[in-house]
Image: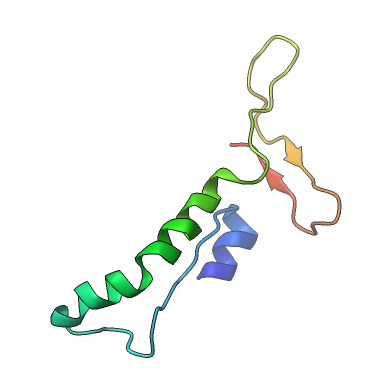
Length: 80
């Protein structure tokens, strides 16, 4: 579903697995958290990178369905 969501809804989804065991036992979770906490937090901080903003007309009103293109990226997005 990740590729479909990105291509058809402009929603960027990720599935992250931190080991070979997709469903670790409850007793293993604290150790898995400690082993991966810092890298997961740094990864989540990346949400603050990139291009952000609001597309407005000359009167300050939002423009629905405006197409946003980035040179070198073969995936346009639209405003809501």
